[in-house]
Length: 353
Image 1: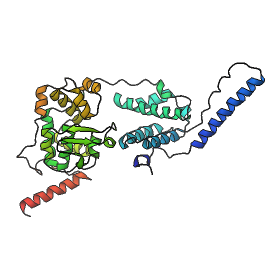
Image 2 (image 1 turned 90 degrees about the horizontal axis):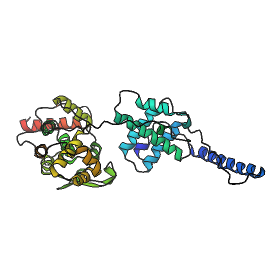
Image 3 (image 1 turned 180 degrees about the horizontal axis):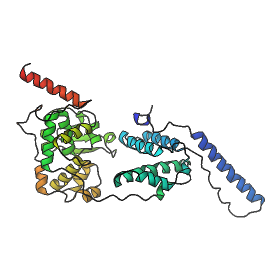
Image 4 (image 1 turned 135 degrees about the vertical axis):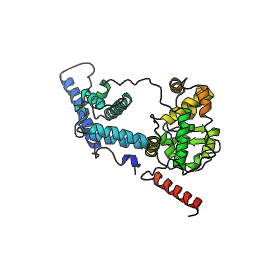
C-alpha cells in the first residue's frame, strides 16, 4: 500500500502502460518497414531512424503517474503535497487533453495568472517542467513545452528576520498562550528547524546537547545534528510537549493578536542570521541548517551585527512570567483547545476550586 501522499492524486488515474507499449511496438514496426522499403529501393548507407511515435496520453494520467513515482522514490509528504497541489491547478480545464497539445504560451499564461510573487511563479514553472520531463522519459510526449517558457527572476531582497526584541515579544506572548506552542517556536527560533521538520520531530530526538533531525524527517533527506545553545535549553526546560503538527494557524492567531509581522520562514532566517554572526563559521551554520555553505554565506553574511547576535542568544524565559495569564485566545481545533483546557485546570488547582 502506498503512503497517504499518493492516495489523493489530483486527477483520477488511468491505466497507460499497455497503451505506451502498443505505441512503442508501432514505432518499432515503422522502423522495420522503413528498412525493408529502403532495401527494396536499393538505398545504400545507414537507414535513418523512424521518427518515434508518441502515445496520446492525457495530462491527468501523466500527473498521477508522476505523483505515484515520487512517493515510491521516497520523496517527503510535504514535497508530494505541494507537487500535487500545483499540478492539480494546472490540470483544471486540461485534464483530458493530450500532452502534445499543450503549448508554451498557455503554460506561460497559467504561470503568470494572478498577483503571484516571482518565487511562486518560478515554483509553478518548475513543477510543470518536471511533469513534462517525466512524461518525455516515458515516451508520452515528443518534447517539453515548459522549457520554452522563461524562468521568472527572483528579487535579491534580504530574508525577512525578527529583531531580538521581536523574538522576545513573540516567545513571551507564546508562553502566555501555550507550553507546546512556546516549545515549537523556541526550537524554530534557536535551532533553525523548518516548520515541517518540527512537526515531525519526536521528543526522544531532543537530547541534552543536540537535536537530531533524522534523514527521513529532514527536507534534504540527510540526517543532521543541531547544537542546543544555552538559551534554547532554558526554553526547553520550561516543559511542554511537541504537538506533532504544524502550528501555522496558532502562530497566525498569536502574531495577529500582538500585531507582529511574520515574514515567510522568519524563524529559520533569524536563526541562520544570528548563528552566522555569533559563531562566524559558515560551515558550522550550514551543517546545522542543512544548507550548502555557499548559499548560506551569500544570503546571510553581514545581515545582522555581532551585538544583535549576542542579544538574540541571550533571550531566556522570564522567571516571573507564568503560564495562563495575559494573551489567551481559544483556537478552534487541535492544540489550541487542549492547551486552553490545560490552562483552565491549572487555574482551578491554584484557586482551590
